[in-house]
Amino acid sequence: MIFSGAMDKSFRIWNIKGENRHTNLNFQGWVSSLTPLKRGKESFVAVGSWDNKVRVFDQKEYNLQKCINAIDYAVASMATDDEGEFLFVGEKNGRILIWNMGSENEPDVLKETLEIGTSINALSFDAKYFSVIAVATGNGLYIRNIKENKNIFRFPEKDSENNACLSLAWDNKREHLFAGFADGIIRVFKCSIAK
Image 1: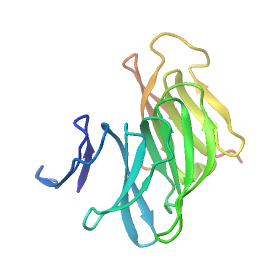
Image 2 (image 1 turned 180 degrees about the vertical axis):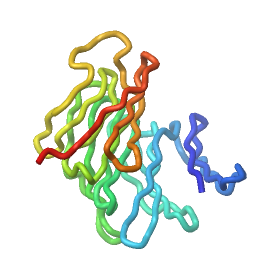
Image 3 (image 1 turned 90 degrees about the vertical axis):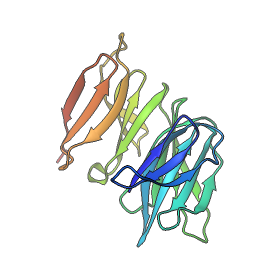
Image 4 (image 1 turned 120 degrees about the vertical axis):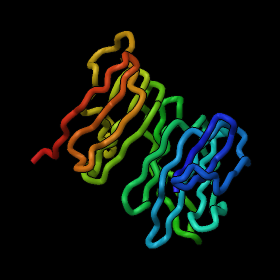
């Protein structure tokens, strides 16, 4: 299945033939971010929108399982760890909210808030790098240490025109981070774990 969110405030599910299999129009803002979320053997999809909410749907009947309302601004991007224990919610205004996702009978708990200080366009978290998160921002690419809440890498190092980083993607081995910038260039960064 393919999940899509749109500016018409819809969340849709398609098969690979392009046939619409499910549509949800119960959003008050455009649907801006989707991320798969695993919890044990269960599969969910987290849907973030500009109505300042994250809704979690199951991947069987696409029923709403829970809704996170404690978000102050539009959801720009989301990421999760492999176990689905944590959900990283990037607000457009420059904050990353780290939610500890509860089980069916437990509440979700806001664990930490990271202040980035500039608009967020995309997030990428990979468990291989454990305590860092890649953040595409209006001022470029930041690699942020989550535990110490500080940048450990920034490109470009200083503000300049057309320096906004708009999108992020990892290669299959998680060794190269592809970052798309407003100047029309995709830059590739080689990443490794310090020994």
